[in-house]
Amino acid sequence: MKTEREDRKKTFNQMLDKSNNVVADELLFTATNKFFENMTKDYIKEWANTCMEFVYNDLGYKKEQVLHATVHLDETTPHIHCVVVPLVKKLDKRTNTEDSLFLKTIY
Image 1 (tube, rainbow, N blue to C red):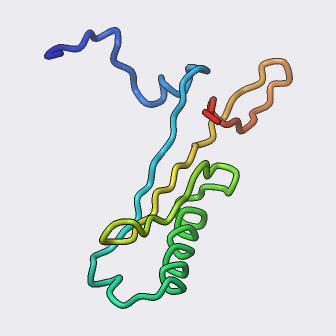
Image 2 (cartoon, one colour):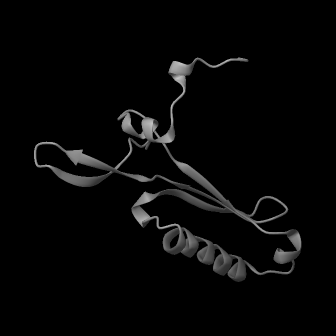
């Protein structure tokens, strides 16, 4: 479509407010072919662990938020696909407390 109706445009926060939305982030980690040249599987595993440490320590995701993380060795360059689900703060109006909830996830 060349045009989009204004009433259908939503910001990220507006999408999060809808309880039936699924929102996930897919992260891809890779490097050049030269980086992986003559690298053993043990070193690739160490590289993958370093990438996942980045997901936890620098990006701030918790292990329960990682839906999927896989090292792919089937192509020229090894790479990691990692899918994470952000948490949403939701106010419980009965108790007037805030709680972290996963968005509706697909399992």
